[in-house]
Length: 201
Image (tube, rainbow, N blue to C red; front, top):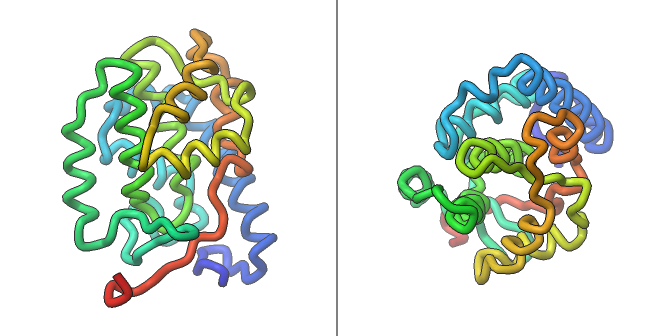
């Protein structure tokens, strides 16, 4: 199934290529113009603004909370009926320490607020919190992609694995363009989402 898109692309492989190219260009603009640093760190409103900026040329739903239930494998992300409540809770979570920031990141991943593009948007969102709160960002070139995906899959049960994995990759190079752009790599993203109706819950 190919998501409805503004570009009228019907081939999933082509859509993935175009999506990655356009979203990376927009992410670079967000970084180089300094617009990213003007956003408030750690709020869903900021995450929605990031998502809209990255994907507005591609998807009609850019920046909007999803209107379908999502799952990956046997894991179901926050159901629609609780999604707004979950996002309000995440907004209220503390983010003073590294541990608190990662806990917030894991909770946002469980919420998975958008139909597509959650991973890339959330990694920019995470780095913005880390940058403003503790003066660090993740150097994604030092994070093994397979280890990351496995750790994220297990994080709803226990977040120590993802916490330690990202901690080892922290850097003080908070204004380095290459470090920032590594987080936009599509190979860090989950694949194999499927949707289901509320009655299936």
